[in-house]
Length: 130
Image (cartoon, rainbow, N blue to C red; front, side, top):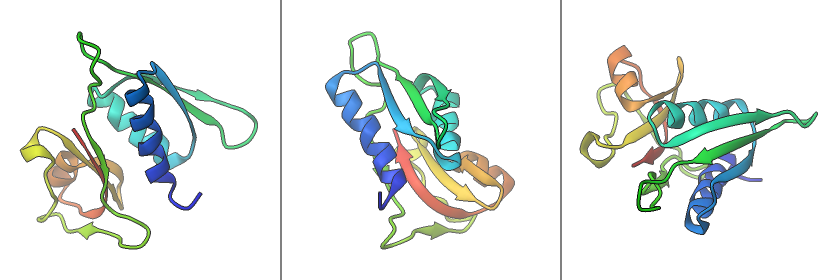
């Protein structure tokens, strides 16, 4: 797999388009941190770590509104392996004018744009979610 974060986002997108209630994704520390952010911000219902003796799996339970539409409208990869996107603490981008979240990988761990602005730290812009 060339880009595991892109694969993570694509698996969630495909599962939502197919109307699945859950999706299994190969686990890593970065993916666990991103999943925890999605859970804290209310984009997914819950997640479970499945130990398979290797790297493990993440089982995400996707969230839909009362009409059956996915809560996550759009997930976009920002920093790619061919072109990394970094930003300082004063130039952190906003997703949908502050209504969505931007997930950053900083020196203090993986966090949202609002948390990064609060602690005044920049980093690699991984993706936007709204």
